[in-house]
Length: 104
Image (cartoon, rainbow, N blue to C red; front, side):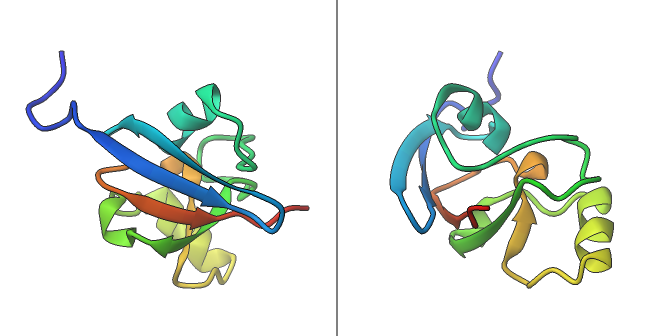
């Protein structure tokens, strides 16, 4: 059962050097859920804030992502990440957001 206010759709725009796509998803879901059903350049491996392969830059809408988990915060500090960087595996989307993904 969905909690009240969690059934509305939000827009997630994912950009890279070679592509840009906007996706609609249910508010409150994690970015991983989006990537399971839509082709994005976001990669996942550990899904536990241990590897950093899913790091994304938040261009707009940082306030629309859940707060950093303790594990994510520790990892980003250890990696000296930029303030706009987040681990996609740890984020739930609460409103529209625009992300940039480095392609390797």
